[in-house]
Image 1 (cartoon, one colour):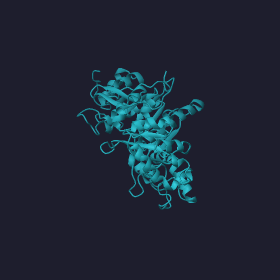
Image 2 (tube, rainbow, N blue to C red):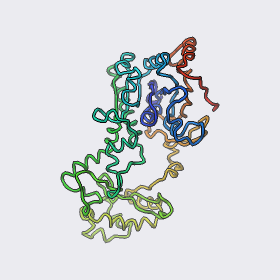
Image 3 (cartoon, one colour):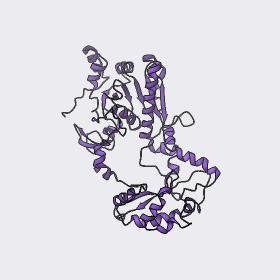
Image 4 (tube, one colour):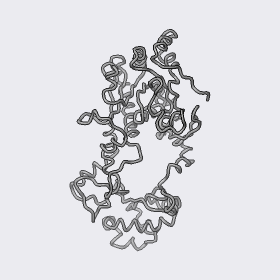
Length: 423
């Protein structure tokens, strides 16, 4: 069995933050029923399309293992379908704009009345406060959550990261909240509301910077590149590629950097292996030199030290450097491009990168479940076509008889029937 076998999710999510959450639950075995507008569907089906009239990779990579039903929530018959789904499902997940679910007629009070056991899980941009009604996207969340102000180099503007910490990061947080709410329901028999604000999720991932903000009140942040010659203001500065954990680290050029934008390695000068670092880079005299032997003495000279280490790394490819440094337990990591990650066999072997067959797209690469469980193996199944499972859900999940299904179809509440392409 899978960890979430028997759990049914009513998925009102769209774009990225919500679908990330529900896809993760689906990977663990939950039956996720994605509700979409007839003829339109999740907006990402058509965004960033690389093949005309085919669901985009944006959509397919966020909606694995789900079933799709098309329902017009403004149609009275459509509302009946949604009410029946609420009564049947365990969790309703939504990431609409603030107040949208209420305006649809599905307030928490209404949902709870229809199904007291239901967990209502929501993602919003901000929590209660001056900005709670604002619309938020990935980069807005990164800026409001403290990430952008602390990312980049001190002499440049704030930067957003390529990692989707606002959208996907918040979805991961919500998935944990849902599982906890289901666990509590096992004891109480009653559902509850679960919410995660994108600003809060980003801040949780930036906690070390809030740590540094408080440390700043007691003196300069000595592991930052601004020390000892730069100036510290009253807020945590941008620190380039410095490590956030107190271990001096930097990104260094490797052989081929002139033509390969990713021929770099991250190198950490960890104190316990300092003497090994000195031997590897050909500076054995630094082991006993009072200007280099101890961490406090090295801090003011970190730029010079990394420049010297870089002279060594530039004679090695990033993979050769990794092989050498790992023999001495010197912490390091290659800067891997997306092309290298896509071609890395070990990631295929663990299911972290998977090939998925799609009836209209063909085969494509996607990420698999990053969480590995020994007794709940994850299987990545393709995303659904728009409305592909409408008839199946009405018949098998809601147990509607043929006459009622025909009445709903005639009302226009579920749009035109969809047939899956031959697989």
